[in-house]
Length: 113
Length: 112
Image 1 (cartoon, rainbow over the protein chains, first blue to last red):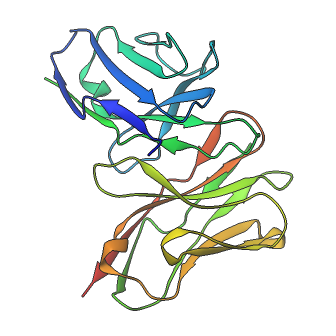
Image 2: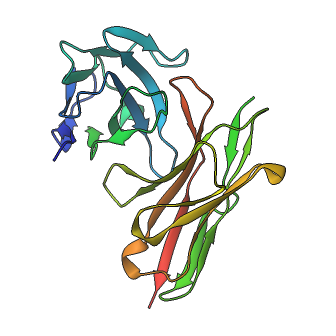
């Protein structure tokens, strides 16, 4: 089945220690998104890629970076995680056609100690 | 500014009872409308969507939603709730760009 895969599902990192979360997709969608979701809140868009074009949300901290080496993979890098960055990180994709429905991965739960 | 309001933070219904989750949006035209469901510790799954046409849309898992332009609403309904429906439900809109605006979510509890 075509899907969005996130690894790892759970990640523990230390305060200030860089961490990378990964996302891959078999849907061949041209748009990939990263969201941050804190407990009992709506997902908050951090950035998205339209093909190789990177689009950062205005309020996304500089501490968050992303890479998309090819259509299938996208990475979220947190350069110096703080305690406030503990959250669920969701990757999503959307395809052509302009309907903007999104397909989500299962998420990575990040804990910062 | 565009926004989505889900007025109920949580709702409890008995198994087998009907369900309606409310959603209102603020936008000057008709946006793309979505309902997503999120089970604990999981990603979001699309339940249904409205782009145009018939204002009553059917989705997966027996859910339906009705778009009412005059009320700027897109309420989600299910005639008979199952215990497995317990989850968080998000209403969302997209106005044609890459940013989807989500409501704060409604947590559904199902009691036996």
